[in-house]
Amino acid sequence: MTLSIRNQLPGTVTTITPGEAMATVGVRLSGGQTLTAAITREAVTDLALAPGSAVRALVKSTEVSLATGPVDGLSIRNRLPGTITAIASGGAMASVKVAVEGGELTSAITNEAARDLALAEGTQVVALIKSTEVSLATA
Image (cartoon, rainbow, N blue to C red; front, side, top):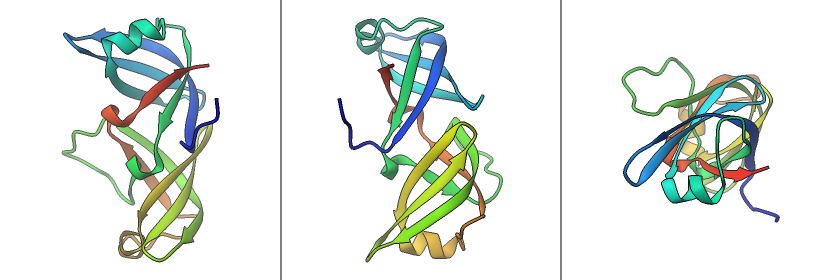
């Protein structure tokens, strides 16, 4: 299956914490970082997920926020440090490529945000991704 989702990071399930309707799934990415996905319990069953399962974490580029400094007091659990490798600006939006350990992320942000953050190639950033915006696919 071919997907339009650019951010597809390979990893391995490390933990599954079930709730009444949803579960959190911990994923160790190939670069060593930990990512959390909040998915339905039904999805956990349908994908036959268990610790050790190979997965791909899928995140739309519009769901990747960027920070240029330390982020405290924020509920977003997924924080991947990286370095900007490219920026392409259009009329209203910018597509920012970020090299992270074990892969690359693309973030779609407004041109205004890119200017306000003074983003450029080589800038160190932290990619922020809410766990509810991480989908999982079996590898």
